[in-house]
Image (tube, rainbow, N blue to C red; front, side):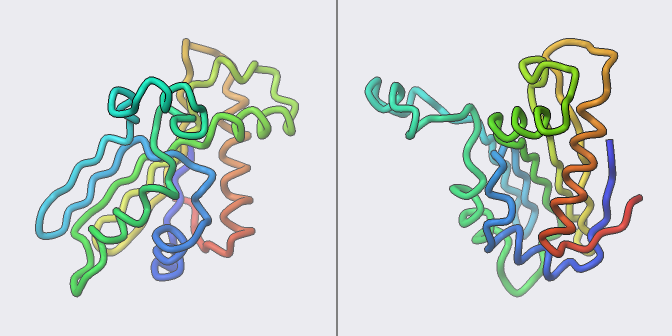
Length: 167
């Protein structure tokens, strides 16, 4: 697990809410506190779709909403004259990206044992902090995926010119 404080909040918010930087992620959960508090469960409600739509993997490819489909809504909740009091986004790296990342790093743990590589973004009104985590389907002693995920995320942020400091 790694905690990173963003050092250029304006650039980060622009990339998070208006750019495609976080499109490799799914939104598991969002909480936005402005004049009101909004809570969004990112789970896809498959019952909403017809049986034909549910079978079409392009319509419901994941258990959670695509970040790119949700960021506009979240941007609308956050933008305004005042900065938000607080927000928290829990993002999961898309499963196919998890498999590629682990394979590229010769991880000894099979990707099927990993439920999600998680990125939690918290903003407290003045600072944004990113925290990594790995969710497993069962208990494992091997923490190699955690280290791979931490290294991959810091490299990704650097390539995207998102400045941070390790906490």
